[in-house]
Image 1: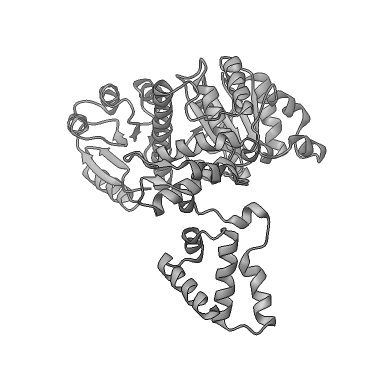
Image 2: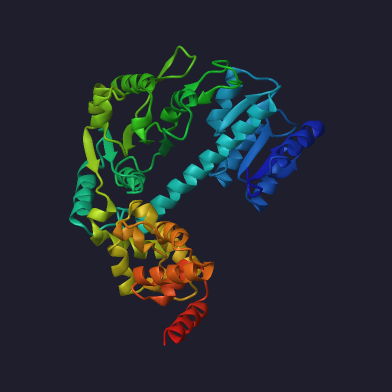
Amino acid sequence: MSSQSRLLIVDDDTAMREMLASLFRDRGYSVDSAVSAAEALEKASEQCFDVVLSDIRMPGKTGVEMVGELRKRLTETPVVLMTAFGSIDSAVESMRAGAFDYITKPFEPDALVLTIERALERRALEEENRRLRRALDQTSSFGDLIGESPAMREIFALIRKVANSSSSVLVAGESGTGKEVVARTLHYSGNRADQSFVPINCTAIPEGLLESELFGHVRGAFTGAHTAKQGLFEKADGGTLFLDEIGDMSLALQGKLLRLLQDQEVRAVGGTQTTKVNVRIIAATNKSLAAEMEAGRFREDLYYRLNVIPINIPPLRERPQDVPPLAKAFVAKHSPNRARTISSSGLQYLSTFPWKGNARELENVIERALALSDLTEIDQEDLLLDPTERTGRETAPAMLAPAAAEDRLTLRELEDRYIKEVMRITDGNKVHAAKILGIDRKTLYRRAERENANSA
């Protein structure tokens, strides 16, 4: 965890306070401490903390009472309470007061650290949700979703129609096309905008842990389950759960997801009780689910449950009209403190590229150009695109190496031949060629002058 994560520990027990401070400092946290609720509230009024860890039973105000006052001052700061006198009543009281979670002493250090990390993840998620809401208020109802092509305009119109619906949505498109941006825009354009948008990548989490992440688990459900954990379906209650890369979910978990969609009930791993939830599901995939069903890797009944409202995002190469507005948006995003632009020739050049990585690749190119150039206006030569990507040809080194060995070229002759090839594929643009070659522009000019002199 980053040292920028600021933790306030509140406990009247000196030994416990020092042990906890040492535990979290060793993990990179910035730690402050207080011996009472009153001192904690005073410190919280003077500086911001990312998370608060507090004992419940202390002289003066209890930890539960402190939570109530703290939440009024710092509504975004999660509080985790701990006590040696654990009971259902005190847990319920803590949650009602606004605590993020509750842990009972004695506890495993790793379990406590995991709880604090989950609290920080929740804080980060809520901050992102607030940022997106502000962006929607300040710009348009589609926030970061940008496009001028007919295909994108159709997507905008579809979002307007279904934003307030609770029907499941399946977003399909290649990697980098902006499937999560579509999902977020759909959420924040509808009547669930004030509730949580909870994303999860089904590929990023091991299969054995994904069920626990989605449905939660009870204490003791499996080895390492020292405390109960709320699943993402419950965290998204009233809002939207975004299931990215749904095509990679195992068949067993697909069956449990199908049951949830049918019954709108969640059962934690290892539990016997079910909890009603009201969650809108937006799923996304870069795979052909029709092909996955044909191969027996995706359930047909789940597909029809998810594909109530299909949204298909075409690849960027099929909508070049969207490249200029996207490029301009990425310039603004990556140079917030400086007015920078892209020249018309630069925008035209970007529009001719195939963008195999779609908008994500375009953003990468823009960010790199901004970092490498000090100019206010980014021009074509500042955009380090590999011209061979556009033509489908082999790279120059791959073609030249066999010829060099066969013709017994010296290293200098090989360099000269390579420079000629790079100059050819850049149409004689010495600025662009010098960047590809990794040499100074003046060096390239001198090499060209020497070659001209030798040929004369």
